[in-house]
Image (cartoon, rainbow, N blue to C red; front, side, top):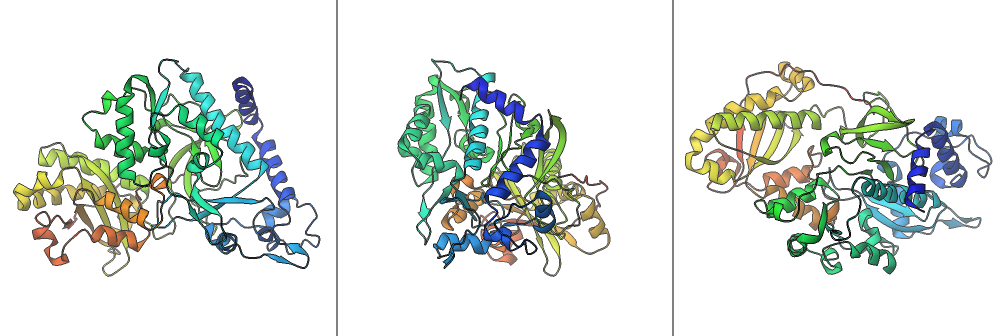
Length: 502
């Protein structure tokens, strides 16, 4: 399809979103009406081959999460026989199963499996999303024959195989493991050869990506990574020299998930923090609910509908959603708190201090308290000469940190329901160790993102495992390269949290 025709098709799909969503749901229901997952909720439908009305679907099939499909997914992965005398039972789709994609590893150490079926609908939606994104990029930044290479920090990761013989990989790696024609067209524009991308050691691959970029710096038109953390890690390797690679605008990406292409960035000249995404009404059937809904559901992301592009919702990503009502601090609260804490830390200590990474965990033990883990650049060098004085100074900064943790945290602290927070300043490289552990547990390196909200005790164990004996943390932390635990907060926050809409 020509670029102009593709843009026109993308534009037209956003003009009557209600119709396209209704048609998408109708197609899914008619095509997949015989699958076992649907049928177990449609007890009132006598003829399982009869068309399923949208109203019946909305009334009978509840909103779901991964756990609702886990048994079926495991059966598919194991290659279990799902047939009887009447023929095969399609568990989740009537289309052939191609492979499995790993979910992004954000809140757990082990990725989930997302089945990928040979579906005409999903392939058409994926084509529109990916090719449309490429065309939008070219419309803003026309190709230049003399500067036409990309330094892409992409990693194909290892491909594993399930018990049933199906390949498992990250969704972004699928083109790299597909037909030779697809691979050839992809590798032509990249500075790194296939051997680098298909390697098995992320540290070595990143080093080779940078070397290839330096060698071909005169012909590099863009630097790319699937996630921002990939660029951050690469730039840390050449922090003082990255401008030698090339100077290009920092652009926001698209809103793609392992399950489907959710939305596309139609205004790529906006900086990443202002990026908004146009929902793709033909990619899947979407249902929007208020974030503070009392329904018993599990939501992955929280977005704000800020406007409309034609009639398609224009989405602004807010944060990952809390998984339970016990999560009293949101990602937005935590990010705001870190910004305040870093500013106060710089002012009190009188030096330029950079928080490299951070996360938090709500400990329900006795006493209940919020634990925050931060990694500060060159923290050993900054604090080791004046350990006792540094502890006093950082304690003073903790008030600013707790003051920014949101209204729910404030209420529970005022009631005495939770104790003062525990702040752990980790040794340099602690979050890199977290990545290593995730990879050791089967997580794909290219899908890994450091969690801002820890919901898995194993991750906490890794963070706390960097330390020596607990009793020695305060006095021996830096000499033993272990976390510094700072406790004791007196001031109370006064700021109200905003409730966002999904």
